[in-house]
Length: 253
Image 1 (tube, rainbow, N blue to C red):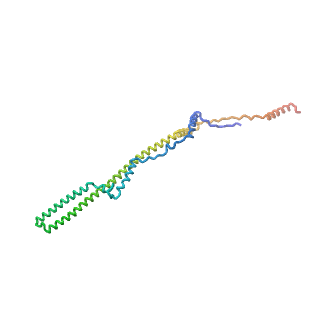
Image 2 (cartoon, rainbow, N blue to C red):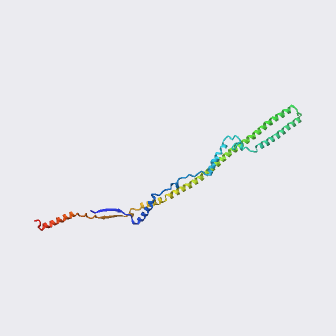
Image 3 (cartoon, rainbow, N blue to C red):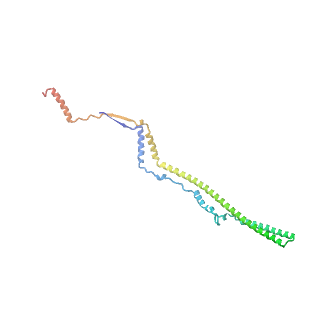
């Protein structure tokens, strides 16, 4: 009985490519991958960021009551010329008060009441009012100086907070740029580690997508040879044939 066997044979035009592909693929099975070369990395804080954090920590002195005389206190924002301003203002006030006293005396002399009780009352009243006004002037100047220092302290706090936020934003931008560089390096290193695998993977995909007709199928047909006869079978066949001949010749009656 004839037997038909179908075998798929590589197209001779592709055989070289497939052989080269398999030769390249075989060593990759034992190739070590340096995973440390593309391990994720995080960009460290830069000088701008650490400076912003340090400056922010120093703002605590500006957020309290401002008592005392140390850094960040309201006293540290007082004008160094305040006392000079107060002294000058009080001196001017005293000069005007003296002029007023002189005027009262001159009026008393002109009216003939100089040295009398009425003059004394007028002088005492003027002195009392001047002392009151002098005290109000001095306290007003002190309060104005305190308010100016308080406003300057608040303005300094706002300015430093804004500067800190700007500094922090710059630092974050620089850190983001450095992180992008680290990420790009990581991707490049990873691609370098897997370059051979990637190249062969693309080649393998192309070979796998080739049209079916590119790999020729050959059908080989053949008939197996007849089984050889045994000596006994040959003898019996020959004997039977001989008996028939001899029978026809009348040798067996």
